[in-house]
Image 1 (cartoon, rainbow, N blue to C red):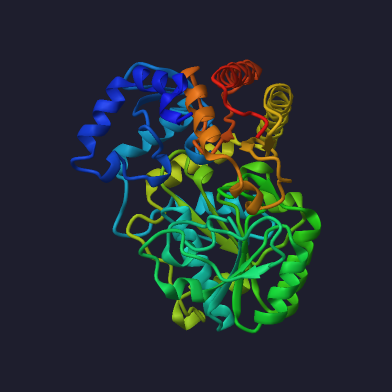
Image 2 (cartoon, helix red, strand yellow):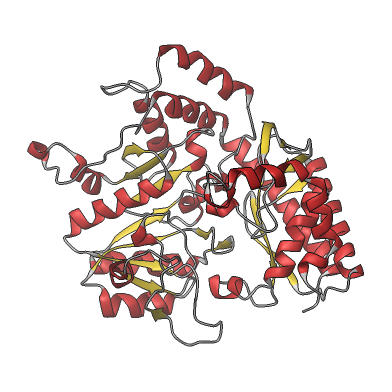
Length: 452
């Protein structure tokens, strides 16, 4: 059966007529109708007009529970009253200045207090920028150029990080260290030449890569849990070997916490007692506004000092550390205390268990991954240890699951990822479970092979 023949697909089109017409108009001015490639999916995305708490409402008046969370950024849901009040109070005094704002110090101090490896912080405007700046710092300090990274990882939209996310070796391919392919057209060949690509959760890949390329590597960048690569948690031995090998070879270890900072009070690194040299942060630290940050040990952060104090590089950006993002972020992070994270993670485990039970009953080929307050549904039987397994998933069933849940007032990402937010309760999880059960039953009744 073609996916367009599915009643699930047709029902989505019928329920989102205003969004479909808006998408058609928007295409005249914006390619595909939206600037953000990750929000595009067949047949078209719905367009949101309002968010409140755990819910969003679209152009057609459809109200959904937002388990998407803007790819994990909206940890307090939408229009949180305390964040809104803080921003509204700040707006009359200006938004961005031609001299340093007093606001950034408080948020920097909070991040240094929470994340043990972070002794100093510089702010920028996104996670992509944070990674660019962290890589620049690593190169400045080590005097080397090449970067090590892992298959399926996503570290922002700069050219030199848009390689190695897709077109991976097969699951049973013995190669552990490979040459990356560009993720998109337009990425220069130099970006591939710059990167040493390793298999995630493979200590053997780490040892092999460092033995072969350690003298060339300025940094190895890692997520404590693969985000775009499938919400796959790191295995403790893998991160232990990573720290040992980078330290032995004089390679900077960059921990990308853009997604995983929400996992614990000290970030994902604290769950593994990982002690990186540099840490990149974004998403939740902006309270719903654009932000990014690089933090790390003083021996690495001093490269941002004035030249007379040993500085050799710079962190730039017209809107870096702007008053609104910092104000919203400081409020959001104060709200996200240890008790809030513990409660959210407990609800996350209940969510994954609910999904596991339903998938085992209705869809034996599907699995759920994740930890803390994050999850992802995968249409593959492969063991979920790395991005190769994730890439083997059935794309049609993935799309139908997303559309079927949307038809039942649940929003997850088209890749199957979900993120909880602090306004959510057990009732929202129950609604997700009910919607998934209904979607799978409908898929089965249409004849889709849920056992692959």
